[in-house]
Length: 116
Image (cartoon, rainbow, N blue to C red; front, side, top):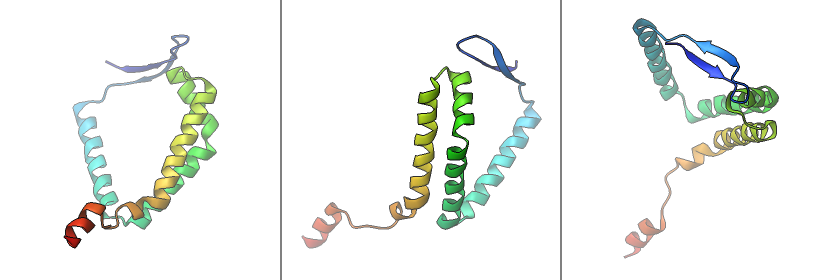
């Protein structure tokens, strides 16, 4: 059975996605596992560069991405643009700040326990 993307406003077929064979699915899972293992070995600085680039690309392609969202999900174009910008901003934020979140820090509970 093929999967279909339909415009919710018109019912028009936008794109048809053929079902994967078991072999195709297995190949994609193997590729995903290789990508994950590669990603896991990257430093946070390397990951931040990639995530920042994704944020930049989303920002640059906001009209194209919003148009696709409008066709596929029926969102208003202004709402779709806002969602793309919001998502882009989240990526940019974490590209810039994620390393700070993984640094060890003393919590109030830890400090209280140490002073007792």
